Amino acid sequence: MPTRPLVLCLSGLDPSGGAGLQADIETVAALGGHVLGLVTALTVQDTRNVAEVAATDPELLRRQLDLLLRDCRPQAVKLGLLGSAGQFGVILDLLQTCGVPVVCDPVLRAGGGARLLDPTAGAALRRTLFPAVTLLTPNAAEARLLCPGAADLDACGRELLEAGCANVLITGGDEPADDVVNSWYAAGRAPQRYRWPRLPETFHGAGCTLAAALAALLAQGLDTAAALQRAQEWTLQALRRAQTVGRGRRIPGRAA
Image 1 (tube, rainbow, N blue to C red):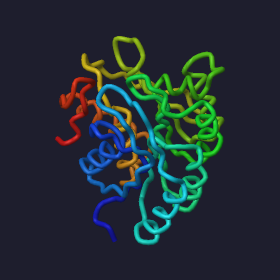
Image 2: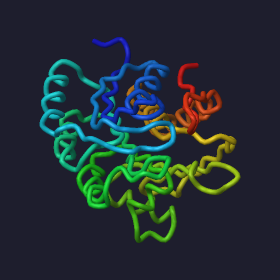
Image 3: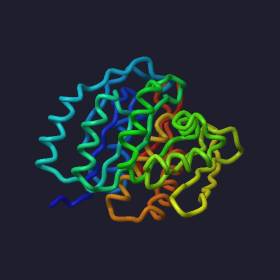
Image 4: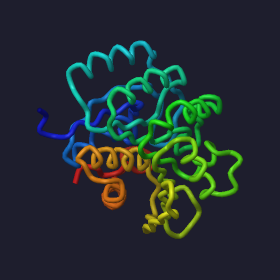
């Protein structure tokens, strides 16, 4: 049996190392786990923005998963950037087979503004995969893209629960407020607010880091409430340790 919890991460490859699969690997390792990693897309990007996305062929992804999961059994799954709607059916089969907690960071738009999934693919993501998701972690802009008719972020949270997600954490780092306010939504309870100090810098990979931290902690057996509290605290410390590697946004310091 593995000595560390295994987290299966399906994410894009970011050449700058700020986001995507490298963020997953660094975060999960720092929290005591081990990543089983599949690249869903190659990207042309830097610390400022994304210029191009090239999706992994869905059948190649299926063969990778089939072989890997005959050998290794993850305790959690983390979904990041998915390259195309053609991958969704492959990933749904995976989630139904594994039966473990699933954290989904619905990466629809880069921090620099580039659109990474078209609206049709975003709607398919919601329809196909959200019913299998334990915890969805959109930022405010992504929540609005997923729920274009919603009146406010609370309405987005309710709508995403109705789409099948067991829990939703809408993060507020991209909102114009003095503090960062994240909101947790779950059926049958009022939203829970988490208020964090807003740091003066801008960051590349903060959302990937938070989602990976949540997956690592759920893989260890923490319940949702405990994982949410600890992952947000840990991510804040990683942002405080952020480093500059290029001319754009800073990269979280995931190695303590």
